[in-house]
Length: 350
Image (cartoon, rainbow, N blue to C red; front, side, top):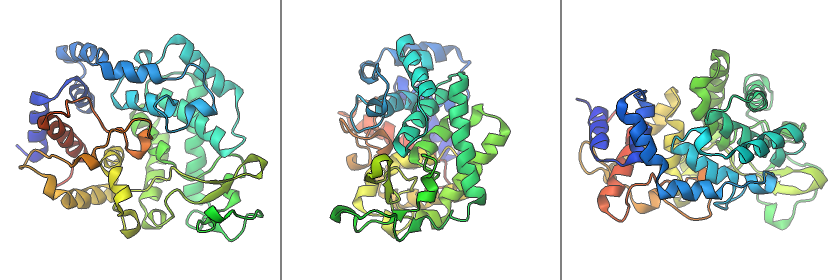
């Protein structure tokens, strides 16, 4: 029995409902009689009640994006990570408000386009069959694919000036070429894209799976990974300047991405990227797991430091600040189980 199978055996024998559910989904074992019983146990966890209560009823830019646990991107993101069905995440009213938001807003600036995409991508990942949801997501994939496959700027994303004087706090940052967001949507991949792609890729047509593969190829290119983290400064409506965030960087990929800051989101992002059959991803995962060898207890189990598995109130889910999978971390075995599960996701050669 190889290491990964032994990890699976250990996790099945020791983990609680969340990881049991995720394992069944990963291994397409959802027809087993135990699946529904475990799913009911998962739904009853107090942690799920907490995140469900934090999903906003009113859907707007301000309630979708942000660091608060009460923002859509964080609360829905956690429930999607746990593998819940759409009907177990949103009430009918919340679902109607999400669809209404998608139907009544346009990609007229970077943050509105991102908010619309977060709502649609997360709904699609949870199983929505709405046409406006599907079109919003496929339009985003088409835009990114067009950029990575044919844009002359795909590895030349910066300019010297954007016609606006920079405040002192931004003068150390690079300026993103306005051509890349001239239609109100930044055609550079966000970490939101990586999260959404990982949740939808098995449920979309082959041509869109191929487009996603091409976008991931672009992200894994060392030229992309050498872009500044967060890309740089962009100009939004009203000529306001913003330091953009949410680039799809891979921690420890190079020296610039190897500071202590990136280690906090490392394990989470490894899990996100592990969903893609991409040679560069596999090389990065293998290399990074070797750097984490000190946290290996034996051939099967890991126990990562607490700093590598943060669970921080009112912080960004996609920055890897909510890594809990509902094991009891007050006991060492809880951290061992979660650590071993994240290692299992990476599926690397030991």
